[in-house]
Each structure stands twice: as C-alpha cells, then as structure tokens.
Image 1 (tube, rainbow, N blue to C red):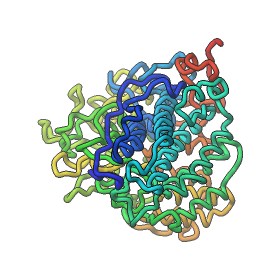
Image 2: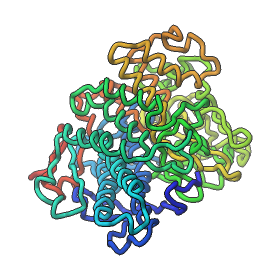
Image 3: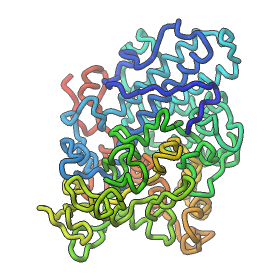
Image 4: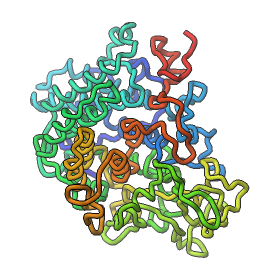
Length: 594
C-alpha cells in the first residue's frame, strides 16, 4: 500500500538491484549507502539510513523464495520449450543436484546467493549501527526512546538475516561491526558453531528487541507497516525455537509454545486472525490484524514481490496470456515460472495419480470438500476476488480470435495438473510432442496449475500491486504452537489451534473437516505437514518445513530419494571460498584446494 512509515512522511524505497558480488568481507563494498558522518544532518537522514537495509532485504526475498520452494515438493520451474531452461539450473534445484562449486554462477542468484544477499544486508545494518553509536540523538531532536527503537530496528533486521543464514548454511560468519580492523582479524573470518549463532540471534531478539521495539499501537499496523514491532521479534523467536532441534540438536518446544502463547494473548500488541483467508494478502492488508510483519509495497513506488521480472515471486506465478482475464495486460505478458508440481502422470486416455506421499498439491487440497482457496481465481467487483488457483481449463482472453489464451507457438492453452509436451493436445490430454515422460524438461504452456496468493486486480482502479508482502502472519504462530503440542503428544490441543485458522478456509466447516476435538479428523505428523503445505502454499517456507519433519530426502515428482542429508544445507560458492580462505565448505560438497 501507499503508506509511509510512522516515523516520517518520506519515501524509503531505492532500487537495490545493482550487481552482486561475494560478500565474505562485509566491509568490502557498501551498496547505495552514504557512509560519511556528514550525511546525518536531520532526523530524516537518520531514518533513511536506519531503513535502507529493509529495502535491500525486501528486494532479496525472491532469493529466499527460490531457496525455500524450488528444492521442495510443491512448486517447480519446468522447461516450456526454450523458456526457463537456463542451463538446467532450475531442474538441479528440484532434483537436489546443487552438488558443488562447478555449478556456481556468480551474480545469477542460485543456491549460493542468499549468503551474499543476507550478508550485504547485515553489512548495511552494522554500518548504520556503528554510525549511530557516534551520534547524539539530541542533535536531531530524537528522544532516547525513539533512538533505542531505531537501533532495535537494525538489530532485528540483522537477526532476521542471520536466521535465514543459519537456516540455509548453518556454518556462518558472525560479524557485528563495520570496522575492518576488527572484522578482518583471522578469528572473525572463521565460521562459528551453529549454537553460537543461534544464541546470538536469541539474545538479540529476546534481550534487546522485545524491550526496545515499539508495540503495535492499534488493531493493525497501518502506518507502522514495514517496521519491526515487538510482535514481529517474538514471532522470529518462535521460528528460531521451532527449528532448534534441527539447527542445534536441542528441542525447544516449551520455549516455542511459551512465546506463541504470549503473542496470541496480546502481550506484544493486538493480533487477530482475519475472517477471510485472503485478507492478509489483499491490496489493503496494512489494515489486517493478522499481519505481524510485512514489507510495504505500492505500484507507484516499489512492489518487488509482484513485479513482472525474474527477480520476483508472485509476478511470475501466473500462466501465459492471462493478462486480459485479470485486466493487467498493460503490464506486459506473463512469463510463467512457478507452477505447482503435478498430481497426474501422462497416461492417455486415462491418466493416473502419482503415488508420492509428498507433493500432490491438488490432492492435498481436495482431501477436504468446499475449500474456498481451491477455486478458479476470479477478480470480482470493488477490488475483491475469489479463489486462489488457475485450475484446469482454458484461459479466457478476448484479444484472441477464439477467445482463449494461446502459447507463444500459437496453440490454445489448456492448463493441466500434469507436465508434458501436450502442445495442441492440451484439452484432450494427449501428448503430441516427441516425449511423453512427465519430467521437468518436458513442460509446455499447458503444463501445471498456478497459485495466485496475492491478488492481481485490474491495472486500472488503484489496487493493482498494492498488497504489502506479508512475511509473518498470526496464522504461523497458531501453526507453530500446534506443531509443538503435537510433538509433545497433545494432538487435541494442536487440533484446536489449527481449527481456529482452518474454519475460514471452507464453505462449511463440518466435523468431517475439523480436527479432534471439534471434529473427527485425527491429527498426526503427516497431516500436520500437509496442513502446513495447504495454509502456507507458496509463502517461501516449504523447504524448512520438510527438513524439520525429516522428509526432505524423500522422493517426489521428478526427484529421487536423496542418498544422505547433506542437501539440507546449501554449498558455498567458489568465489566465496576463494575470497576468504578461512571459510570451510559445508559437508558433502567439494571444497577448494587450500
């Protein structure tokens, strides 16, 4: 939304898309940042500096999405003719073939690049923190409380980035200063044990941010949207505790339950589940009480998660030639990158369901009748919508002679819950290409169904790309607490927590849908993982959930079972290793000669 931060009436959004380079030396380069003490002349100058890392991190969320969804079982980038081949790197993601530095492609944003992006943000945070340490808040007519809040914003963003790093790489550098004389010391150029980094993140969030960040001042963030609050810091703590057993070998279920209960009971501000499943993603979601933290967005300023470019998430989660159907044709043609993995093989005339326990997205949703999300996406009046999917069928397109969308090759598109070379046989389901095998290489523009998590309202009307990017919402707190109770053997408490969220997702929430004790559906760990997948489909977290459940090594569509667990971590790139010879490659990947 076109909302300013509560701190100011100025824009914070500067493009962060400059060229990337390896960032094991955090002081080596500073991106779009004035470092001179002479820069800080006014209160607005201070605020600009404080929130500069936020813009960089928001821009970087496309890489987070790649890391979380492409190696997992629900979303995939399939090849469509000569579209999305790119040397086969998206297939390597899906099949867990990111085995080494030979696949490194500096600057292209693959499995090594979140390291660079997150450390760039950390470097920005450290730089401004060091600058503020040399300044007197009274000079800028800033109160001590405001000043502490600014520092807490930076430290919370730094913790957010370190949380991502421990998740993806585990063995990381821990740098808290921009002073090269300190950070370039050999002892500070070596990776720390995961437990050390874990305790640092925990202390930053628990001991500083929960005290110094602002409380949500009303029933929703409104003009506070885009900054961290105590509720957001608490939710990050919940993420940390939920994954502690995997990350440091120490279960923290009780700590996780405790912080979740405190969030739900309002200790960190008022948060409330929305009545509609889509409200946290809607064009006016800065007024949604469920959103705990979001990056602010507007078509008039910056909307990284919805733009029509490769460095996006939802802007390329739409089928080709759907623009006229949505009313967004003025923003260019769609380039379908992310679709859901197929549930059906390419047998003809009677296709068969695959028998994988993972993936099978359509079947997981169809398990319970009346799911309001598993409906064809449609824009309705007054900037509202129904449904969350582009389901099987043709795409209405009034610019084409037959009234339906066509592929770049000219055949009418008929979306299918399959991946194959259907071409002109899309509607019948008959393969007309040279290879009938269902695999990543054999996609076409009929292949795959599409998730529309954020609405794409018409270009005209003022709501196009106005949705803020909701990174944390209250439903996650409910699901996190539920999983912890389930792991402790209390399925009934877990079920009740999940039901409070799930009831809004169905046209009729009967006992054939509700978990015990409100219904008769039994909740176990397999169902818990499936429910994470339904509620948070395409929200950049699936890889983490699969790993926590011990399921990441299993087979799913076009991906064989892994031989071991080393793919749970990403490798460091050759450039990163060469720039800092103290770095050690993650286990299972080839290191450089030292």
